[in-house]
Image (cartoon, rainbow, N blue to C red; front, side):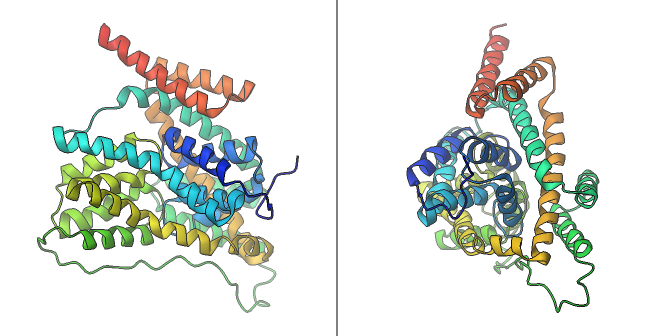
Length: 388
């Protein structure tokens, strides 16, 4: 059966809702893990698109601001369900995390501490690392198409470990592949119409205490969603500058607790905004904060989607996309190594990972069951430790 792509007219919003509600409930582990789950479900199992189209979408989301994995979900929803599919995919991926964050935020505000989820994550993390490795192997076969892309990918991995800025690496990798592949055209071409990074906007805020305001809070989150590049973990710097240093609405400890709640829940890390909003103004502020930080992504995906096929047909832009694709996988590989170091901390965790790898690579067990099984194993271990 040939993979479906954006030209497929059989729109199925119901499939989009079912898939992304499920993924929103099980997608632990951050953006790299989310991308791996999307690839497994949309490309390998459902065949909505092929590996190359998926890579191009991944590269394009790295060229626009916003949460990369959530924007990838929106692109996949657009392919399968049209514009309504775009909205449904984004909303359904965000909704489960938002509801869980709301619950934890309520408990935090009431009892003064974030509930622990260490045992659950203990079992889930090794499984997510295995799922990411599988996605890297499959996508790497498409992205690494010769010595040039292989060298760029390896250089990105090395530079990432040395602490280089991830956004700089993405664009340098893309630029290098574009220039080398088109060196024969340099001088003959007047220029190339490339997708440029958005210039960061700034919302002037006085560096002094100001009363809490719902409209101002919404605008701050809207600004953050419009200029945030890279991983959702970069969010900490943005929120600290606005809410701790300038407005003094939060303390450092409150912000760190909000980030922790965003991390221990599945789905996009940017649902941290939901927790911050709830801390500041209850349910109305939580909903406004969530809408503000995610709203720009819906527009960016809608505007950029028609450009992806044109970029692939252009020698210049297509080469840029090749470079960004392999650079994104290089960053993903570096993140996977760090996740592995933090996940395989003892022999039971290694055993969970090895079992998950055997079931995934040998029997292609659905990743949903693997994640649920890992979580159950972590909870069982916690119960046994508590009983001893």
